[in-house]
Image (cartoon, rainbow, N blue to C red; front, side):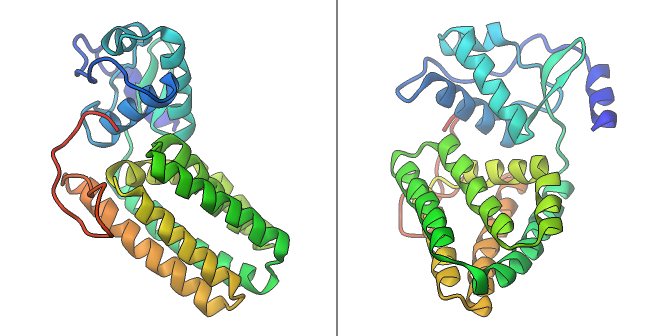
Length: 257
């Protein structure tokens, strides 16, 4: 991170930032600003080093600076934005190679976590995961990407926590920023959030069986899909379809979610 901040400090100040879309529609204002900015970042419309100037963004979206400030704070937590001394909030230079590494590492770590968790999962743990999956299903119906991504992260964090392996959970938490970038990126390109929620439902069913093999199989299936989504993102292809039953189709690129 220090090296990245140093590189960003040396970049020239941007004079004409890309258009981020017109006035905002319904949903809470910070959620809409987050969705627009997140999509612009992970699709390359806002390039690494671009300064996120609150006043400019607020003017483009015809809103006040407060929702923009809140949105930038969310993106900073997700690892898409970094605060640079004397420059303010800038788009972070995240390496595609690091995203691929995060994806492969997550899959291995989580497969180990569910194998530990499945035999010891109790009623309270199942109820906690059920609540998170239901929340994801509701967020998918409303297509609120920010809420969905937060619940997605909390679901997987709960798996590591309930695995009972404290060091494993610490490793996961220690790499939180990179994993959040991965989650935010794949959820942005996948317009069919209901299908993603269904995959989490399948993980929950595998865990409910309390059979490590079933749990590992569900996790492997989930990450196989995520790898495809990541390839679409890094390959510069268009987002996965929002509609349909698990099928992919081409859709016109959009500047916001």
